[in-house]
Image (cartoon, rainbow, N blue to C red; front, side):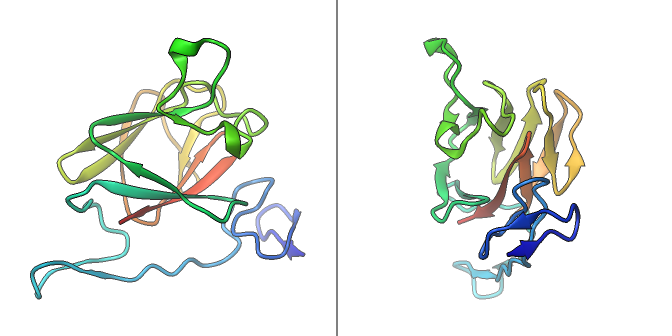
Length: 159
């Protein structure tokens, strides 16, 4: 068992995030990526997406990441009965309803090579690295950021 340093919850061995509060249980190492120009590198924590605009969302408690190509905007959330209200990124298979994710919880938006998140007036809030976002305000995302929708925690990595 891994004991959460934040809330004291006992988590299963190998867990990356606390099941109760979403705090990272292990340090995640992020390296650098060589780009076409020998002199330039994308540093860990950088704000620049590559030309394919692909991101990986590593959801706490799940081995395989969610791979998403951000062409313009993507609504993250869960289903709720109204078919026309289904989010672009449906998190139902990740226990979204149990973890307090709203139907239309947050919006990921790409502007050039930068990625932003906006809380869509969700019931249980959106957090970046433990900081609660103001509803309808837009925040820049960086490689390695922790995003929490309600109690559903995930790490964001750029390709």
